[in-house]
Structure formats: C-alpha cells, structure tokens
Length: 439
Image (cartoon, rainbow, N blue to C red; front, side, top):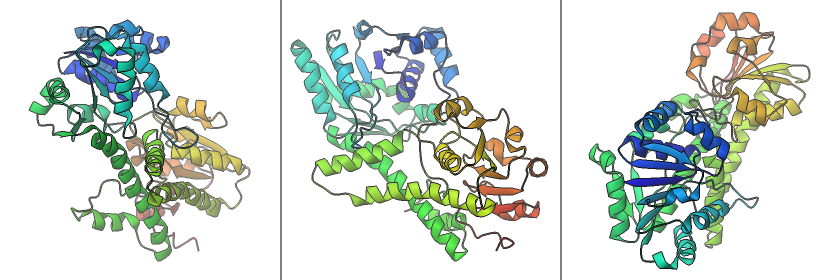
C-alpha cells in the first residue's frame, strides 16, 4: 500500500520506518526542512536503538523516502497524522498541529483514503478531524475514512515494539476503515500480533487510560517507598511479592525518581482535563501527579541529609535521560533534580551515554562530563538517576578513589546495599532501610 506519514517525530518516524520494512511504499512528511534533509541522508533526529539501521534499510531499498511538500500525500491509500499534541497551560492537549496538518493536506488528497489518527488525542478528536477534512474537501466526504490507531511504543525499545507489538488497536466507524488497517498491518498480524477493533471513542480513550494507569503504578511504588523507608522495609522486595500476583504484575512497580518523558506527564493532565470537560471529577489522577513530584523532593532531601549544606558541594548525576535507551530529556526526573540541587547552591555534573548534549541544551548550568569516571572525580556524592546498564558494572573501588566522599544516593535501586556498603560507601536507597552506620 502507498502510505504517507505526516510528522517525523518519535512516533511518526518509527511508524514510517516500520511500515516500509514490512512491505509498504512510505513517504515521511514534515515541514521541518532541516530534519527532512538529515533523514534523506540517513541521519535520525533522535537516538533510538536500531532506528538508524531501519531507516537506512528502507531508503536503500527505495520503500522509504522523505519530503516536505504537502503534495506528497497525493495518491496515498493510508495517511497517518503523527504530529505533536503538547499540553496547554491548562493541561488540555493542544490539537492545533493536527488541525493545521489536516487543512494543509486536504487539498492534495485523492480518495478513497484512510486517515489514521496516530497522535495521542482526547476522545472526540477523530470526529473533529473528519469534519475539517470534509469541509476542506466536500467532494471526498464519502471517500475519507478517519480511524484511531494509538501507539503503545516504549522509548528505548520502540523498534522491538514496532515489529512485535503487544496489541494493535484500531477504532473505526465502518468496515472500510477496519479493512484498510487489516491490510496495512497484515504482516504483523500474521506473525502473531493481536488486533483489537473497537469504536473510535473507545480507542481514543484507551490510550490515555493506559498511560494514566501505568503512571499510577509507578506513583504507587514511589508512595510505597516512602512508607518502606519509615518501616525499615525494602520496597524492591515488597514489589516482588506484589508482582508475583498475576492480577497485579511486576512491571512498572519500581520505585525511583518518578516518571518523566513526553508522554506520561502530558497524557495524565490531558486525561484529567478530558474527564473534567465531560463532567467527571477524577482526583486520583491529580494525586498520581503529586506523588510523582514528591519523588524528586525525597531525593533532594536524601542528598541534603548526606551532605548537610549543598553550597560548594559537587554532585555527580549518573544518567540524564528520562529512561535508559533514549537521548530524550523532556521532563526528565534527572534534570528536575539537577535544577533543584543547583538552586540549593550545588555544582552539578552529569553523565549519560546518549543524552549529554540534549541535557546541556535544556539546562546550561549543568556540567556534562565526557565519561562516567570524569563525572565522579572530586564529587561529594553520586546520585543514580537513570538505570543504564553501563552503571550496573561501575568499578566501585575506582569510583571511591575518585570521589571526595564515598556517598551514593541510589535513585533507581541499581546497586545491592550490602555490597556497596561493604566497599565502604554510605548508601541511600529508595524505599530501603537507612544505612545503620549513619544514624
């Protein structure tokens, strides 16, 4: 099938590259000329394991190309809209880019066509999108089918998720829409991917509901961590016990610095605002957000407890991206922590295998080290912020020699407390009993 993907961000670019790899003729379209020029040369605008290779494969085979011209949508059988839906000041999703994209491409459509709403949007958006398209092109009113197909990709594992999705969700209003998506995803369905077909509103709502629930699990684990610290219990062991119950599951029950990134914060707020607009107060969602913010405050307090005054102290942050496997620092808990420590007078130096440049751009006051041991030299405290595998194999003896004080605040419970303390470190875990030698 001939496919056009409007928007080449994290979702759009993965969508375009994946669909070209499973046999479709795909055009990735974006108004950012510099980005399109880079993609044409095989340069991905962000880091995602395996993505660059996937783009190279598609462009070399001729099944994937990139364009800035709206005319590129002509002749498309399926058109994905994957533009950003950032949060407004009110917390509601900003859908201006979706409307602008729809108006820009409408005049170049040639039916019949399935327009796929891939961006995360509140329920009711598909109907508005169809209205915009058909007002612009009343001659195609009977040939434009709008469907909802939310993405469930995990940054850092997005290529794997693209080829082995846990589910493919399609919301449509007619058999024509369902049939078009079945043909599009045929190779993935044949290899075992589960296809779920619903009405459009259900599909739209399910995406926000899923992200909000995952955010809630993380916040629950972080609230539980505060309780475990007071009870001298181990939140990791508690989570293991909870996770052994198949009704609960172990995933997303790791306590730490909280969730960040682009999706959870904006989707949680957008879901809460949608509920309010529909006349339902959903206070649980606000509490999930409050507990998440509390995790950063708790980490700051541990650093202050370890160092007393933060003025003239050098603090090394291990990990700057919001999660491992990505260079994405949008709403990263590590940078939120860095800002608070800098405001307290500390010198903060950070290291990340992929996100150093992005972190420096977002927070110029941050000192970014070229290597992990460069970050540790002369530091009074280590804070583990992102659980990159590189940090799991840290040479603790070498680290101790480089540090001004052998103190670790483990914001991701990356290390075993007994081992670290046995090497002579003062260790603060998250949701774990305090170091018996400290009090």
